Image (cartoon, rainbow, N blue to C red):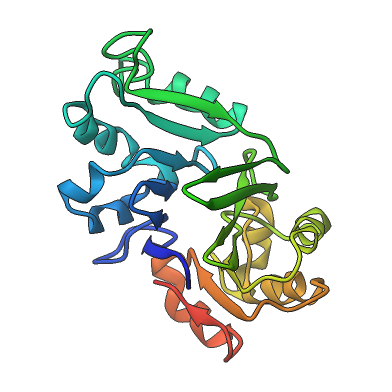
Length: 245
């Protein structure tokens, strides 16, 4: 796979970290506890962070990561956060509000802040260091973006948090043939009612989503298992699916 998965858990347990993908030395998707797999020097190389949505398991380590960068960058440098208008509104209201954490979009000054926000919407793409990252909408309890990463000739779709929806199937089909897909599976089949209520997937719903694709990905990676449910979920996964923990 052309992505380094630092964290893929749907919660917190032992050495399993929550969602964080390293696309290159300077690019991350999400900032869950998996970011702790990087040492300080590696963290200080990060310049671009793509956020899927505002839920804490995907952004909980963002403030501390940015704190590690604050004194490492000279005044001409900054870190760019990419995400939806809704995600940024949630971060500004509930995290970077001077109560939970300082507002690093105006530090050390509003003219030359450490953090710059770049709003992106579903269907838009950004190219950094020759890596194309295209967004698509998923189906979750808050507005959420998936990311399709084209790197070194391979296309990987990170679906982020989602429930089953025809719109997600259509968005994935619109990307074209996938070399790999990273698909969440938070609940076992017997808890499908909870999965539907919280807009997550079960093995059965994963099969339904994948069955709607016009062409099957070459590799199917499953992530975001709830740690306390992992032993119930794993036997229900298809044998050719590969598990990310």
